[in-house]
Length: 97
Ligand SMILES: [Zn+2]
Image 1 (tube, rainbow, N blue to C red):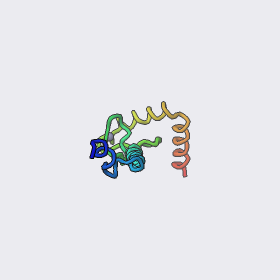
Image 2 (cartoon, helix red, strand yellow):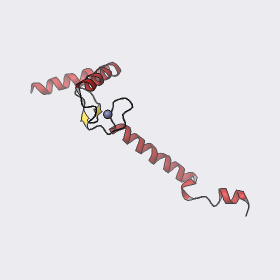
Image 3 (cartoon, helix red, strand yellow):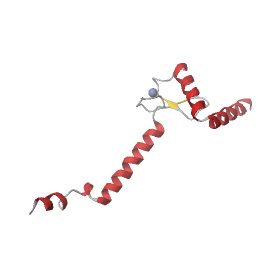
Image 4 (cartoon, protein in one colour):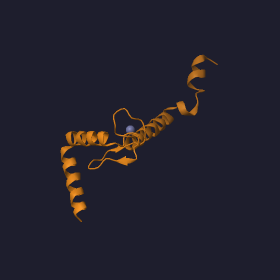
């Protein structure tokens, strides 16, 4: 048996083209879920469980301070001004009820 048969025919299942697509899809889904739920503080790898008021951001327990939350609120207002305005006006309406 030649070396090419050894490399390309006797390859494991996870190296085949179909499995590569599946692996890439699963990897993308895992990365997407991680990015959805991780802490929004820059370079923080922890899971964010605490919501930042008036934003769609979450922080981990380490970044659960006024300093980090107010910085994230300013960042959200700068990056997404219309969404920030909507979220804060909706929260004001809910707090009045
Ligand atoms: Zn964090």
